[in-house]
Image (tube, rainbow, N blue to C red; front, side, top):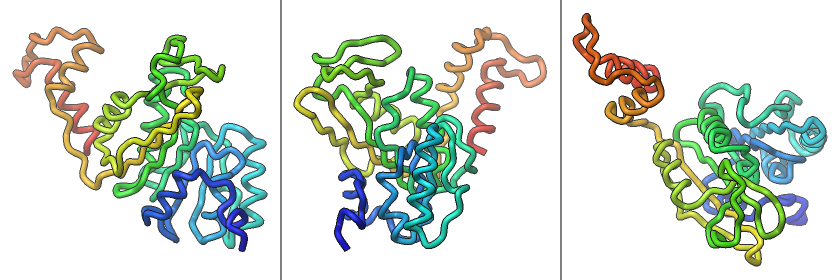
Length: 249
């Protein structure tokens, strides 16, 4: 079989993850923001349990047609018209989550965080998050800030851009394991694309109560010195402990 027929127009850095053995036959794969399915051809042909979401109904119709032709087992429910920010899958549903050229369409920092957290939610412990997104790495002096972490690039497009510090902070926040150094491709100083590969750990460590305490105080405006008469703890401490228990239980 011709390689192009076997692999389709798969992203070369996603193909690299295949070559490194991080994606194995039989795994459940989600392409979040799949477009018309350019990255799904090999997985559909090779017995993976592939799923896809995209906000475009036309794109999902194309994916369903592609899957019906290539996959040995397929139901149209596996390709859904949904936003990446709010997917209908259960927690820990997938062995591999693909986000290829999607996250840079975030409208703000909050929207970016929401998308990443949702990708992480549906990824099972031990699973791989493969993300490729636009960044300012290497072209910091060539992009024009527009607000909300969005920038105008030299090629004229507008994107939400990350840098190395932002991605590393997000890695720490997720308690993810960086599988390899960040890799950035500079396209003639017109735009840059960074590959970010994370493994979701099997064990999540508790966020320090002191950090939660600070966050609670900032968000609620509570008096940090006001003590609850029953528990003999400050109200801020009580709420921080409740959040920690709910999040990690």
